[in-house]
Image 1 (cartoon, rainbow, N blue to C red):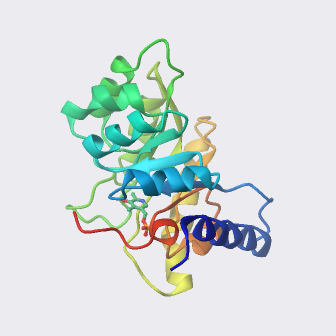
Image 2: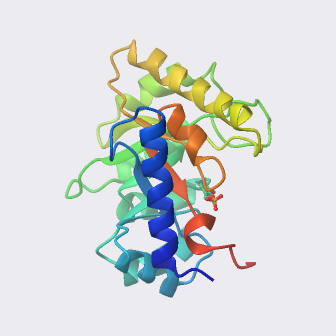
Length: 227
Ligand SMILES: *Cc1c(COP(=O)(O)O)cnc(C)c1O
C-alpha cells in the first residue's frame, strides 16, 4: 500500500497535470485534504507530507484533531446545525457548506473580533433533489447578496458535490454550471474568486472547469474506515 506521503505526491501530480492540460496556471488550484473519518495519526502524516489545510464534516471528530494539530488550517465542509455554529465560528478558517441565511447570521454574530473574518462558500444543489443539502440556483443570488453583507463573514465563492458519474464529459457538466453561476454573481460586483469543486474521482473535470480548491479524501488517505 502506498504511504500517505506517496499518495499526497501522486495527487499533487494529478493536479499539476490537469492544470497543464487545461491551460490553468501552475499552482492555481489549492489542495484541501478531507480527513473525515481518518485517525489523527493519518492527519499528522499528511501534515508532515506538507499539507496544511484539512476538511472535516463532523464537528466533534474535527475538534479533537484541531486541538492536536494547531498549526493547520481547518475547513468545515459538512452539514451545519444551529447548535454547531458557535464551535465552527471559533475553530475553523473556512466553511464550504453554507446554504441558509439563518446559519450565516449565527456564524457572523459568533465569529470573534480577534479572528479574521470566516471565509465562506455557498453550497449549491444543482440537481434539485430535496434530500440534498445546498441552495438551489434560483435562490442563490438572494442568499449570496445577503451573506455578502454580514460583517464577520467573507463570501469567497461556491461549492458543489455532484452525483458521482464515471464519464468525463458528464462530470464536467455540473462544474461548468457552478462556474457560470459564479460569474453571474460577479455581475453583481461580489468579486468572488473561489470554486470549491472536485473530489478524488473527478478532480480533473473540476480543474478543467475552473476549480480553485479540490477537496480530496480517498486519494490521499485510502478508503474511509467504517464509522
Ligand atoms: C468526503 C467528502 C469529500 C472527499 O471525497 P473523496 O471522494 O474521498 O475525495 C469532499 N467533499 C465533501 C463535501 C465530502 O463530504
